[in-house]
Length: 212
Image 1 (spheres, one colour):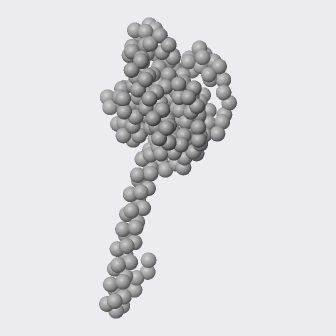
Image 2: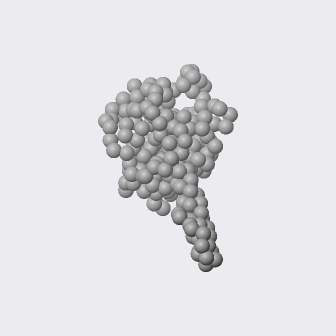
């Protein structure tokens, strides 16, 4: 903005215009920051967790998929209610048990069909039930995080046009990813569940909205 010092009226108008410009800029920055918090930054392709690789051996048909277009869910009132219902049902139905106690191994990803499981088993079950309910696979992403103590943890990310929400066996609340307090490490790619991508800083990503 080019402001030239002149008469008192001109100077006053210039100050008003500058004040308006600063306020508009601040409002735009605040809006952009809020938008950025809805979506996490996606980085380079990385290695899949060993648990997922072994899961694909045991459940081969579920991993025998090709690349597809990314799809985000339109977060309607009905979709939100369904997300909450399935999250609560799995959290209440499954009894927590470590892989060592359950299977005698340090790490194993499995459907909790016997009623027991650890974090990734909860997430896999929620993913399975949501897909059965009609949610697109491309919007339901197995995700690896670090908790506040630095421990590895697995959750399910539901990608929606209103942001990326986390389904977690550690809490009954479904939170926006940026409200969880976790450090996000990696997750499945939207375009291919057998490809995993690293996660980083938040970004403003346009949602590829898709009705269910």
